[in-house]
Length: 294
Length: 294
Image (cartoon, each protein chain N blue to C red):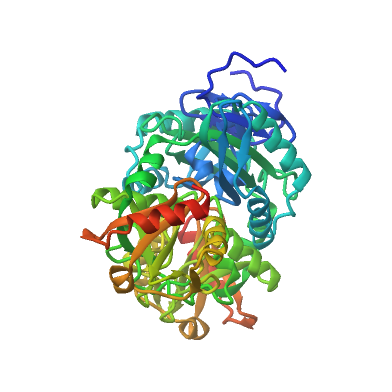
């Protein structure tokens, strides 16, 4: 194998049906429903590349499973797993930078001008930012923001797309802007009936004694987090009990530790919630990070 | 001027900074925030082209004003009006098909890899579908669906992007799928406190006696409809009174006429709501359509 003399910091991009494409090339038509309606879904997970260039992708099967769930709830065709795996293989083959990166898969309903035509599928690998690694290391300050929905809003309302990782993330982006204005690193959404839900791109986990808690799925509309689920599975084998139950901001202030958990940042300790410091939990953070594979 | 021998039914596409582009050409990078986050906004309005090829664009100034409002609420730079008008002029110059078409303007935050870099701007003209014209003519059946938010949810919560015409429309698309499953043509969203809000891409207007009503903006989060506002202005000069006030589904069943109003379909009579016929209002529909310019 000849190693190409490319800049190893540049993202690598692949498109279903076209294979590898230079990352700066335009790939999407102006009437792609992913653009015109945010009508599609995505997945993102960590890739760890060794000095020798071999890759480990976190929970790829689980992410492809969740992509299939998103597609089903969006009435999109089931993703062709073999084609996606082939595309992932192609982009990873061109990714040589040792360290952490994010593999992203995006899938849209295709073009407005071709109803029922082919979906658009994109895979990319991008180096994990220093900011993400720093937040994992040092923890984060978080601002709570109202999500405007109740903890049971999404029950029997599939058109609200609860639990679907859609491309329609404008509110998530806007909420993160508000957090920045408030001097925080991230957001924790709360329900109208007073419970914590999730972050724009992470799940919340909190500890009381030896029990790890997280927000239940279903009526809350939150996304089932693969990193949180993997953490809970490992934690159960390590002396923790785990619990899916609604909690309040007050519960978090009283907890023995609170984290935002996601595939890129791992297990990030919330050190400050709405400006108030939370209990120090450096030891638990280290233990949970290891259990989650970070 | 030489008229080019193009297929006059094909969309015409223009891109800010690049000018006219063939409609099938890819124009968007894979990391454009319009795709990856639905992070941008759009406008759509009707273009009527005469047999001689001249164009009338409905309320273009008002749409550019609303685009600027969306940008402000998304913390995007104010759109450069002259550049957008120039781009609109370019796409219209290549649009020759007599009859109705939709002019669409889309604006995204640009590429993830270029934070603070140039926005992406797209203008397109596409022939209005037969389906839209038929619905305007014959009226529509509508299903009510819960939006999951209350009539005051968006008050003091700018991160929820109430009143912003974002590209994050996946829930709107999903709701329309649910309507189709229920044998309806369109959706009317309702609030958790029992009021009608808006349709995925239209406003609701109803008539009692000589008063036209519509849902107020602000706390409801609904989009300020340019077609509805133009209708109300004209209607006030034609003997109607107008009213922004919350109404219930029961109010609509009792009304003298109910319509979904939008820039493409115009004033479309709702003949059936959740399977129950509404009062016939053919005369009022004709009068309101004329007032709205359809």
